Length: 128
Length: 175
Image: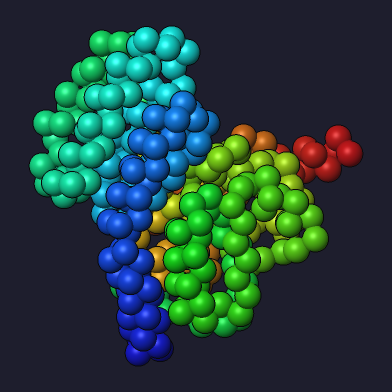
């Protein structure tokens, strides 16, 4: 029975590794798409893509991107336009840095960036 | 000690809003040889599906579009009829702080599967939920698996059985 368990776990691990290996590209596509939607003023589509990152990134070893996306999601949900515009630029910058500089986790380089992002959100009264 | 299981006797319902993760979880369940795998993107879809189907176990994400996984679990435990309300439910989440775990536990979740998921943790969560089920508690304030995992000697007779018996005879009397 233990052999069967090992075989099943090995197959599952293979499936996880295969998906995780392609996730970085997927994440960068999501960030690029959010930027395009924001440039076009399509907040609804930007929110949906942001939600994708919130749900998926932690599952594939990118919790820092998930956390930054959660802040961005809250910003996009904020009603006041000027507040949203300013904060969106900062959050998008954070997401771009996290993905291009491979800052996957807080411990792996994302700590400072996420703290700054959360402080900015706090200051603007936005809670993720 | 890791529990082994023959998942080919079981069917599973997956609730995950991310298409990418849904596909991955489906592949994992297939590699575990579940005899049937159904996946839905929302808890609302799952509830509709459950009107005509009964899986052996449910895996739900916490964060979903619409009804959250924990609210879905509470709905299953408090509003649905047997056998659906007794189904083992595994909650998948990236947020495993103590408060969240307690909320999940108190709403009747059987096992927590932390993200990022691994093959062995996923296997063990399913094997524990299906092959080592805890007693099912059905009380007015809590419905779900026994929240205590460890058997600890308390040094005096356990009175909860007595209370349960009293509650049951009281309800018989009222009926």
